[in-house]
Length: 242
Image 1: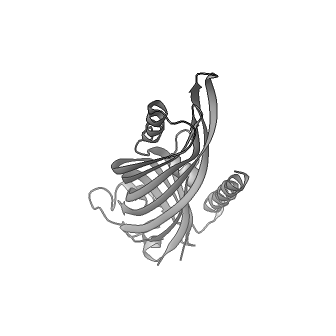
Image 2: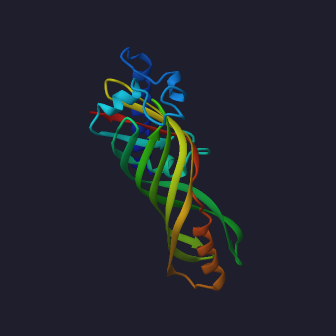
Image 3: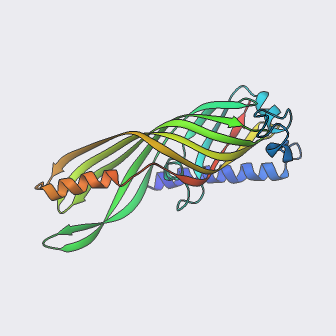
């Protein structure tokens, strides 16, 4: 877990440095009021200046996606901080993202000998996404994509019975956000809200040790299905294009 926390710290430090660059670099060309007018909702295309032009002048870009507030952010992004590679454009951006990370949580356990106790568990989240953005003007956009999320519970224990649990879902993502691109190549985006629709799901429960009962198997299957479509607020994307 220390290695994971160190990686998260490095990502946040890079994000902080990029934010400072956006604040103090005099060559920024952010979207103006025209983000919601000009080439805005009616026109559906770029307004011909600022971030839209800067995206058009780029061939590719690489960056990261993360959540800054775990209790409100998309849990996959705040845990896995996927790396993304994109082909930007004035009106459309398409890309690919992948990442993984561990998340610690606690849950209630029960046994006849000890009664109710609290167990700690480390969950591994892995994300693979094929994403796109449609821009209304310079920065205002609709993010969307097809995602494959895998959630693994290694050595999950209940009533003295141990399982390996793996839950895989495919999800259609969509949301609303803003993204600004500077003329020196850096970009910073905030998806104010993103939700999704689960397209398919698969649950794998493997018994490892202990005397399995109908109750323990039922609880193992229930644990996997407790996770619904991933939803979150204040999702940050940042990186550099060329």
